[in-house]
Length: 341
Ligand SMILES: *[C@@H]1O[C@H](CO)[C@@H](O)[C@H](O)[C@H]1NC(C)=O
Image (cartoon, rainbow, N blue to C red; front, side, top):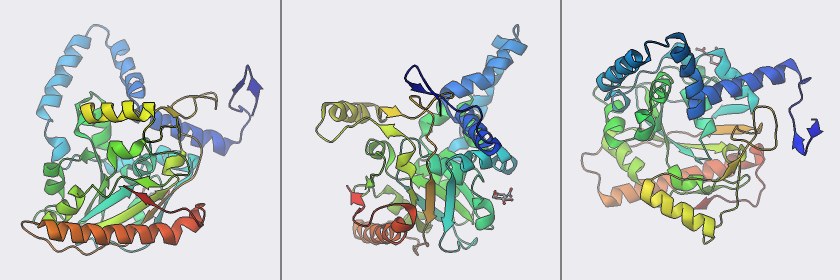
């Protein structure tokens, strides 16, 4: 890789395969990064220079009409999720899904995804698209990746996320999709650790915000959805993050921001479009997402605290076992343990 002016540039003579997977990653940045979304809509304004006001009016009316969709199951389109470009994006890292058990299409599921990483890259590649072939691995199962409602408030971004099958992560939304009377074969993917966990997303680290997170357990009991632990090895490796150990000034500032605004601001360094020295694009490092076996959950009208705690304990045990069983296969050293907080 050529070095010039202290910057490591991309190699334009790389293999065709490398170029194609690079394009997959670039495509991903266009449809999921806010700046990329602007690139997508800019041509419309250029094509219809005199009608932009009308376009905005029309779009605003659409958003108003469509406002409840994110919490009513969304409208994921399989043909978009199956696009070849998603496969290229998966091959870039490469990102892979590893199945350990069948999921019965007669039941519903909550897949709890860990760790959050910076942007849950593996969550997107593996569950919002067929990038790693998940659609064929689990016949009869429809996956919906859950994300913050705020994402559906951003113009254009909301439609893109919906087309990829994303739904709101609110209780109402989850209970709507997992309602056993109306749906079966649905699997929602919840990134349980959320914003808090992203501040611990450092390469090689396996720290989860899980002990205090019990909402997903309660939802499983309420809806009778089976709980599936999912651990994504490498999720924390695709971005570097500025050191922010608990107690540091940076961390204190980040925690204040998180508590007041509900979002985290990790200081990240990935790569750029043309160089590897800085930027917000993900690094070419493997992501291996292991989907565990479902834990049986019996539906319960009013889940008691005891039952929630008991199931949470069982869940943590199963997740830890999954991590221990597969860590060696995916590059984690023997003495590295899952850190839970
Ligand atoms: C999903 O991806 C896998 C792996 O690339 C591919 O073999 C399969 O045909 C895809 N499925 C669909 C329905 O497109």
